[in-house]
Length: 537
Ligand code: HEC
Image (cartoon, rainbow, N blue to C red; front, side):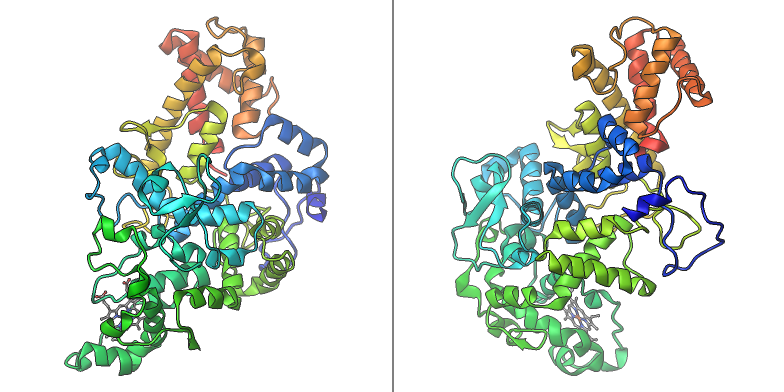
């Protein structure tokens, strides 16, 4: 807890300190709590959480453990890894034409979302249950929901479950965790010429953080007449990648589809096709030079590969600090990795270690490597609005607008669709503001309607205003505003401050235009939900 000792101290006068020097000062406790809570459980801290932390900042450690143990952490892991796996796409090459149920486009969209979430749900369950991270490539089960259970050849591990629950495939596929999920190989498919190479590259990127295959390739014209198969095997500008890529690709033929778009074919794994590499490239299977004879052995080889452990820590580092570690930060990174290893490879321990990092806990601009405030991701925005209002933006008969682009606004809000947009933009675009505005308006009205029916003690937002129909007195309005700022912006303001004055003036201005008090509250709440203090962390 030494970090928090910097709270309340005068900030050291430093022009600019390189990363390896003195740790930067921690953010004030309210903002730090908001950052941690949004990052770990996707919602703003409650008033009780803020009050407890303010009263005794040394309880932050215990609070972080509570957040990490919260079911919402599992949801966060799904969201965070969605950007790594890029699997939560609206469409795959696999169509869903084989089944009459998919004529219902809403149903089809929901099914596709479940397909893309399958590997992510497995990762998240492993993290939430504190299983060793090597389970990601070794377990013989996956996760399924009602939709996947209805369509995929899977059954529940324990019958009678609801929601996302552990399942097992019934088609003799190898026990290789995410590498044995349909979701992974619907997202990453292969044509005959591609020969599973794209799949092998994706596997290396998400599990080993091996980005080498993503480098641009220089196809020199002078060699263009040489047979491409021969070039791949002999041309120095090709073998650098293909010498390891193609043997890895040869281990993935159990997921081969003669018709990549065929739904019926894509449901299953084919042990009978495992050796089909002979007919395609005739490059024998191997894992980075190590002999392997099957995908099962690839799973074990990855679990034994130090790059797999490094990659997990690097990914968590990226989730929280939004960048890879710099060379000057290798000491800290190595410590985080040691913590992860000592924990028995529990992903939560990695989150815990990076969440303790002074650079994560600071946004002091003078310190290089600290994390500046940034816009909430579509998932974070949706879940933090939902936590305050109960509102979730459904479109086209129940599709989640913040997790979809065919019908919704995920990419417009700065998210990725995993196929056309694979990296989130680093700057905020105009469409982000538009999505935030519309979501804020809908959530504001929804919250007023909901809370109007609720007794004060059950309300989250308007709990200082018993009568939402009447125009509040100035004093009551100020009490309510102080509460709202605390709950929605995670800040404390005084009832007689200039900021409170301007919010009171805003309320009156809206009231003059809107007419009724409930409408005024709805617009007022939407203004709070659109404010930079809400949509940034
Ligand atoms: C930087 C790494 C890298 C280098 C260098 C490289 N490749 Fe590739 N190659 C890949 C990856 C990755 C794929 C799979 C791409 C995908 O599906 O996303 C691929 C796929 C291919 C394919 C299959 C294309 C298809 O139909 O999908 C051919 C053919 C190929 N490469 C030829 C070559 C030749 C010839 C060279 C040398 C001039 C070369 N590559 C150099 C990484 C590389």
